[in-house]
Length: 216
View 1 (cartoon, rainbow, N blue to C red):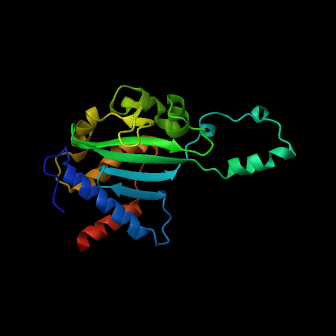
View 2 (view 1 turned 60 degrees about the horizontal axis):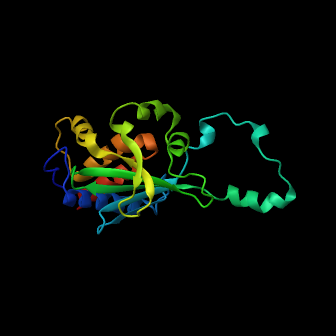
View 3 (view 1 turned 60 degrees about the vertical axis):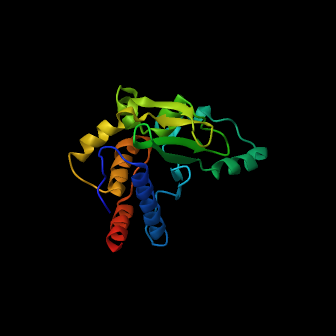
């Protein structure tokens, strides 16, 4: 795989290649005994949209103490509702799209939940998505201080969005002058932009991708 032509920027074709490699690597791992933190990954070449889905694991109860006196009284008639709630696991979807204006990937993310407990608000962002140790960091001025709510360019619904105005700067610092292929660029971008909002890459996936690249 050729190195990225104009780092720290990426072309649309390089983004396409990187996303396809990531999807192929994930699919190659799904039949192994390796436990995956991602539930699914797909790439829509028409929209240049990479989607990664996983269970929402950072919840409101991890940010504040739970007071049992706050729980409503429960009677037998509520059994069905309780069972439904317990079995309704919210999912978080990360959509990575290519920005022609900035020539970098851009991250949109949102929670899907049958019980509608996680609307696209800043309260949801800081209480349910961002891990506690990153909250202050994301509120400060900086590349991750640019998380806002905007309309998804494909879904046309409000979602969270990390503005790409400083992405090239972050990637340039991460690259340190090294030449890397587009797939490694994408992994590095996920590490830089996704970690604080719960998106990371498991090492088994990286190793599988390198194996696929070497074989082709």
